[in-house]
Image 1: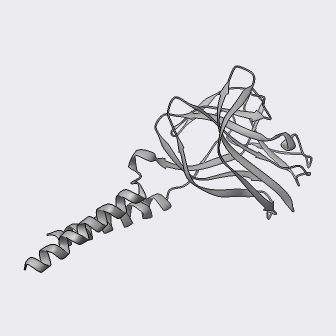
Image 2 (image 1 turned 30 degrees about the vertical axis):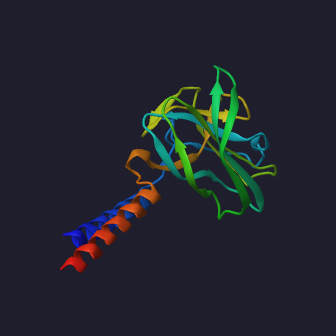
Image 3 (image 1 turned 135 degrees about the vertical axis):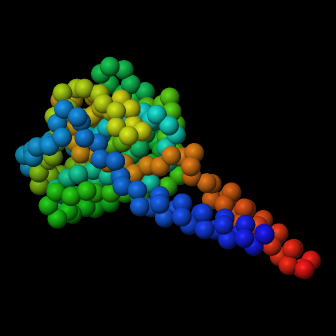
Length: 207
């Protein structure tokens, strides 16, 4: 019985993580422009940081973040922040994750960074932001027309440039998330497996 419990526990855990790993990231695409357009080969304010703000309808855990661009030998930095905002500007309240790397793409492609331990809570506002100082090979945008939209578990999505909201365009961003309520804590899984194994050994000794 307890051996079966242990096998079931490990099997369920393996199936959960396999299904989570196979989930596709959500690419943010405004509904009023699903095609986007190619911009000129300039920096176009990326040195200020360009990003996207949103809330979540349910608690989410971030697996990775990314943006769509055409870069060569560029030092890229990223950040995920909790923010406050009014109708025009935003203020960064806390840094949830940050980092970067030197990036060269093969034409326009997704530039992704894996994250761990970043959880988004309901009732809060967040900013995903990328920045680089040199000139891009080209820039890619969607016409946003300053209209907020919802997509998947994300709500009130809006593009940013530096601290400014209400931009006429939004760059291509994507986030790989999963429902945080469905993600077992690593410590909980380990304790469950250890407990099941101990019970199995105890029953075997009694037999």
